[in-house]
Image 1 (cartoon, rainbow, N blue to C red):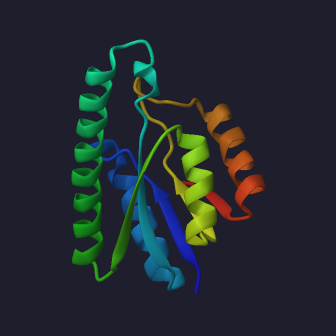
Image 2: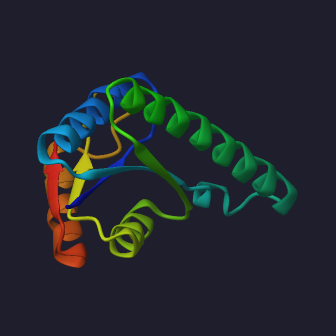
Length: 140
């Protein structure tokens, strides 16, 4: 049995990615783990007490988003595990995939102005993940 690692930011924009991961878990008979990476590195120039507060809020928001994804999976008969990490997305996604033994990583296709990657950068990111984790990477 394999393990699917679905990286998610949560919210409405991530629902189709989460659903695709749930569908794959059902279809392939794999375990499913939803991953949220809280990255507060953008606050490097701000006073430490503010950084701690923001990190706690990012953590709380991530746990809430993951709980919603887990509930969505449970409603469809899929028991999903949750993982939250702190740091930069690439490093944390690679580390989580290795530690959890992921055989498939699911990434969402960026949409609209809030997209972190354009399509070309996302495909390069996916190739990099596959190289460093030995897991298949699917963009959905």
